[in-house]
Length: 117
Image 1 (cartoon, one colour):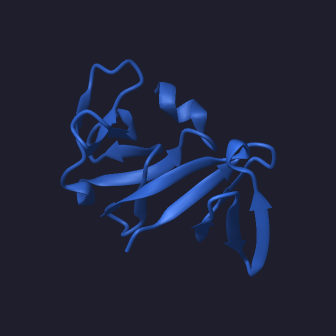
Image 2 (cartoon, rainbow, N blue to C red):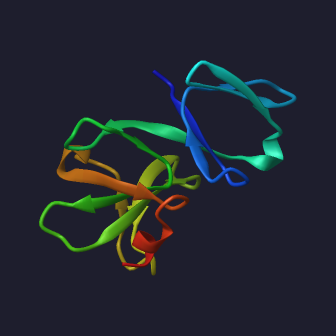
C-alpha cells in the first residue's frame, strides 16, 4: 500500500494519513481535516519496507544498523530509482535492503541532531 506522511514546518509536526489533491494537500490526522498549501509542507513517501520493530520506513527517516554506531538517513536516488541510505558526509551510501536489520530512530525534521552522528 502506498503511504505518505508530511512534516509541517510551521507547526513542527509530522502527520500521517496524507491525501493529495492538485491544488492543496489534505491531512486527516485524528479525524481532523486540515488544508496546507504544497509550499508549506515536506512530503515523504514510504519505502514499503519495515524496520526490525515492524515500523514503516519513510524517506528522510534516520535509521541505525544493529551493531553499528552510525546513524543513516534514508533518501530516494532519482538516478537509480531506488531508496538508499547514507551517512551525513556521504562516506557510507548503500541501497536500502534487509531493512529488518535496522531501527528507525528519528527523521531529519524532528531529530536533526541524529543526522550528524
